[in-house]
Length: 363
Picture 1 (cartoon, rainbow, N blue to C red):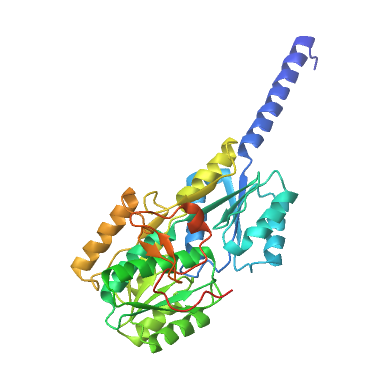
Picture 2 (cartoon, rainbow, N blue to C red):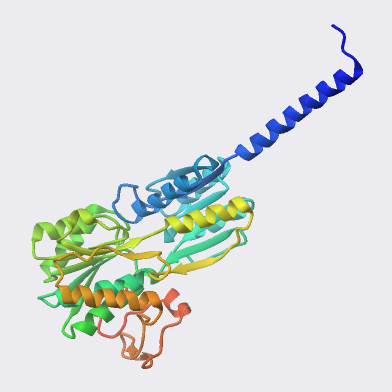
């Protein structure tokens, strides 16, 4: 079979076009790998559960354009650095590290992988390829404190703290301020669990608080164990933490703080895809939808529910700030004058209790 010059050139051009087309298709089909590092199991029913719902939202939004990977129950410390390194070596170009104790490991690994974008939850250290994000959980604590102050019959509200970091201290202060506003006789008892997720420790903390007279319990730990302990005790109210924990509704769980990470994860993933990602510090609350208030059940009197929802709406609109003076620190020194509100810098580094809270913050 003879082939003239024109036919040969035409065939070569067609072949090259096919090769180029295939290369473009392969390029367009290349997935963005997004990694998530979790401090607890995805079945914790709280903090990690909601972060994993955010990961699933990314998959639902972008479909075949992304591949997500995650590692659960990663201890804060050197092991976290190893997991992040493996994710980056495995091709992840965007990595979300979802616990405060991952802050230094995130910074360390980011230095080794300047082409990978990192997003660290609840921290304060950034780098050219590291951004931070958190939610104003203290806004939700104000709503919880209002309900707690109204519901308690013993005037003792128990609070299970995880670690004595500013995020947790802010929540305790906010809940106390607003419980005290509606019930001047209320007192808070605080037990530090020194864990984010340990159902046995969390259950024990709840039982101790109940033995000390608490008939309302708030928590800044991740499992549903305090809910179960309260349910077993009877006549104790609780609030879902990070997730709705609605399986314990209508009582003991009477409402919840819900962390809504999906929209943020989608936004940042799209920014990496578009090449528009920049290192930022994001701190959003009820108004932006990052903090949700779970259904207030009928175990709460209608007038108390209305009061709590009005407070929620006022915070969401910006008409009210949960840290509005006059407020003093625990030692009696002045903090905020009447009508003055706390600045973000003070809140971000909060290391003191407000006046009226008993006990000291562990060091």
